[in-house]
Image (cartoon, rainbow, N blue to C red; front, side):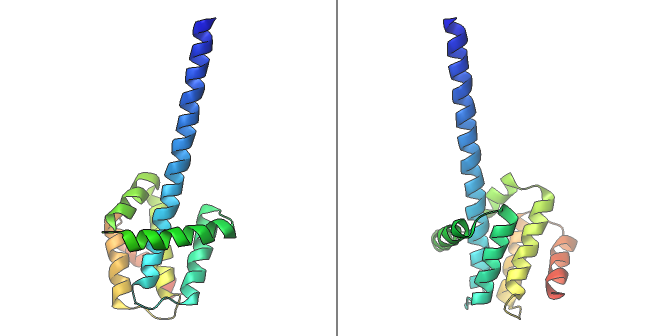
Length: 152
């Protein structure tokens, strides 16, 4: 009886820890994605309201977040982007948490942010390329996102 009660407590503790880890990992994914999207909006040294609106819409739709959560996440993403020393710290999280298809979709979103202000700067294209490489995407997947974004 004591052993079964201890086993039940231990199993519940493991389940709680696992759930907590999943929540933390999901939050880390959201923050990494937000930081990369913010970094994209900054790549041309001029952050527009249109770019910010697209980032908010992307975070809302991709992760199913509320507007309040998105606002908080964008603020955290700005801070994370400011403190970052490389893109790797963000792409590592995406590589761990996203399947290939979702990585491609994320790069599509980066292209949409880059094009959302009506023009593509060379620094924006370079940033998307670096992220796509760090996410281990094929060239045709990278270009496919660009073509979709160009088309509207």
